[in-house]
Length: 116
Image (tube, rainbow, N blue to C red; front, side, top):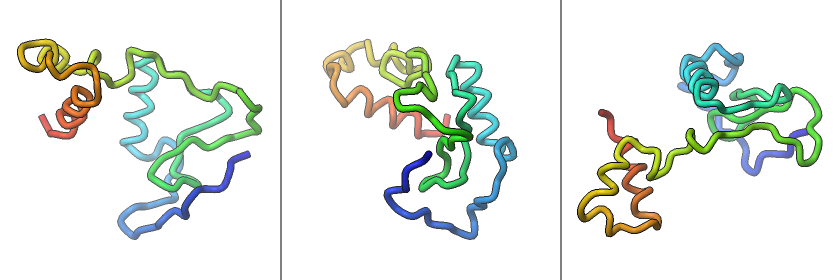
């Protein structure tokens, strides 16, 4: 089944770890967004805090065969300089000189971090 974590999970008092799937509002909102965005999640896995190093991860409910697809994400759901709400700004004026490297995506990431 699952391989060992590369580092042990650090438990903290402010972060509960015994949440069942669906009881966390943020997780529920994320899973709703996944469904609306066309993301497919195999019935063999679920998203949980159980056994993860960070906050969430995929946990297998049953054995998974090598090469089996566990999830698929449509291109339209990926964050890129072509799907961001600031894509028009990235196409205009001096921002067009940024090219197609990492800088435009860095701007997209910074924009997403700022509350609007």
